[in-house]
Image 1 (cartoon, rainbow, N blue to C red):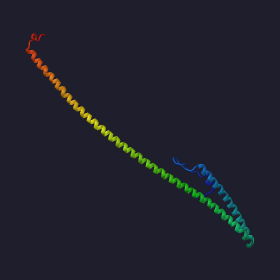
Image 2 (image 1 turned 45 degrees about the vertical axis):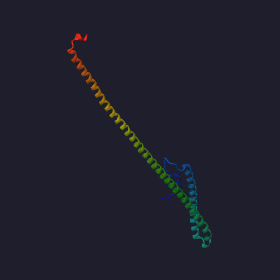
Image 3 (image 1 turned 120 degrees about the vertical axis):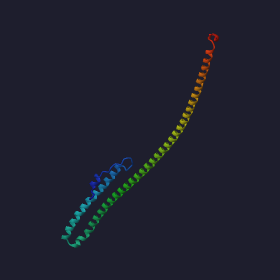
Image 4 (image 1 turned 90 degrees about the vertical axis):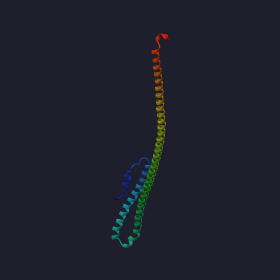
Length: 189
């Protein structure tokens, strides 16, 4: 496929998100300059082809001696136009390659930065998780100790309460046994 100036003018590139790039206006302006020069070169090429065709048709009619002096300048002009066109194409290709290489380098840097950041986030999360687990384990140990203390307190309290109630029951039993033997009149009621 032959590339024309209109192809360059109408070429649209995708915009890249989340990373810096070249100023689209500057790129468009530069491409406009290339297109202008390219169109000039193509017009010149057409003119030179027409001159060459006219020369070749005139050469067949004219003598060989007359054609030799004019052939050299026309050939030189065609070669200069082709060189200019090739130079423009080479420049455009070089700029394209530079932009692609720069974009790839920037992409690689962004990917490396993202991987580094992801690794950092993961390691921080793992460290926080370990710290939280250690804190929860410590809290669990403290709570289990407190539960053990409360169970011991409950056993002691129940034993003391049982002893207190049994003591009062014994006192009540002994008091009840004494009152049945002593007459009410002797107690003074």
